[in-house]
Length: 157
Image 1 (spheres, helix red, strand yellow):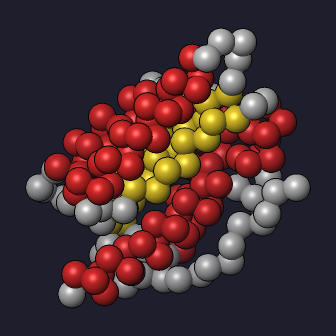
Image 2 (tube, one colour):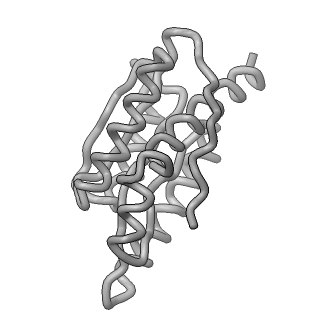
């Protein structure tokens, strides 16, 4: 049984910038997470930049470019993707590579990188985590990003 998304309704002052890097692969599920994240960030008056990439493997490269960008810097990056296991170990290799790259990016740049690149066993898990409004990982990602921007703002003030 999945836990429902935490009801953390922390708001930010207007003018904060958060980027979302979202895979087009498994778009039915990723698009649902993206819609939920956008809705939550918009309600919190956050400026949103969205970059779509072909698949999960491309997410860290674009997230790195966003972290390094000096013009229009972002205060957090949300990464959305869905990887569904198949008959080979390919999905696991992609999932591990993406996870390691995003963790390293976050530590190297002291920038919140919210990892919702889901490595799932099957379509049913994707449906539960991406299409169910009460457990949508895009909503959870947006709330985590907002909270992390607030925390980092306090630590660096």
